[in-house]
Length: 264
Image 1 (cartoon, rainbow, N blue to C red):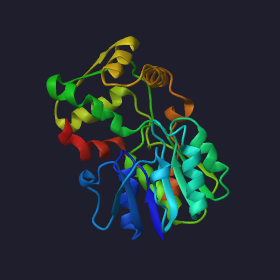
Image 2 (image 1 turned 45 degrees about the vertical axis):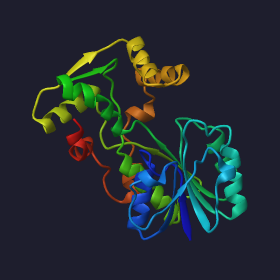
Image 3 (image 1 turned 120 degrees about the horizontal axis):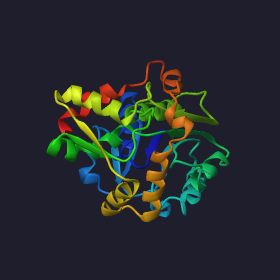
């Protein structure tokens, strides 16, 4: 039995692959550029993208992991249907921040499914790397609490749902073990680096403009900054789902920093 992982080289997909391999599963990883995938030995890396489901082969695939990304909304239902028609019987999906067409299609697919609803990723702190290296400062518009979640925990929950029974039809809100403000996270990062890092608060429009300069669409930039200006209760509140599913505590932001401190 093979597990097909879409978005296999992305923020969470890479961790799904690694955890499945650790469990001894056969994994087929979807990548736009297999030569640069850098995935564990033994993984079958195939060229493709889940936003073009008509090009995918589900030969031998019985389980599927989907990460919702830009461009999937119009074809996600077709992706799910093709998978079900090909014999896939268990699926997991990392949502795109709301229940869209792909998430809905999976819930109505008739096969076992689990939807993962992670809140803010710890890896968002990587956007601070240049300003921290260049001036020991982080520039953000808001200083609000967020129970940021480690991407490896998202991957581990997905792998668990794909390989163990008892998760069908479940919707998992995923957070880390602490609700931390921006200043809290900066202090943890500064302690790991051994230097003081300041917070320079910018305006909401400056934050939007920064995303636009990075190629983000106006709609997406407004959505992201709007979310950060008033995070939902689910994002601010610690949820113990990761611990309940995995049987161990969720990884802390301090652990994440220790793994990525060389980037700063």
